[in-house]
Image (tube, rainbow, N blue to C red):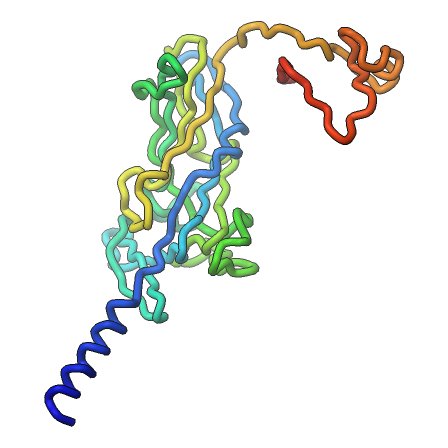
Length: 272
């Protein structure tokens, strides 16, 4: 092989190597689970309890495992990043802690919950209260989006019994409102409307494809909601009551035929 041929070969190998890319996860909050919240306790113990779900919408799985033992209760976390050529590389990503309340290893500082002020025009204001950063046992608990490339049927991370945890592409992990750590203290916060916010990986321990989409929030009302104006189709409590009203009449809940299309304006949603 002459020098020119060797250089071409080397250049070809370098090009092939550079074409390989990291398959990074993209961990987000599924905001629909934040709707499962309620107020409990009084005085200094008054708090909002909430459900939360973290989903992987990225191109690659989140793969975490325990590395060096730090002390009797903590281990270093290693993140394994896979590439398009089936190789991988690794990096430090925070700590695991043995959680005596749950009996298995948790990833520390996985999520933080906050109450924020609502600014004019539904702007996001200052943080009024924040829950402690919650540790999670991260696993594939529910399908988030099975249409994503690389989605594995059945998931890969199905147990918290070892130091290996993670989220497969298109899967999500769910923590319900009744579990330990799922709360924000609201003692001293007056009644009103606020943002309830959840942010995953707030300290950026995990390497992701997008670090700007880790937070989601919903509007909530603490205390008695402001009275709403009843719409023309309320109130009715039974099918027989509805059927007795004139079809399409003023203040009638009997809408009549709804096909092929019926548009209703100025409706309000009544929370039971």
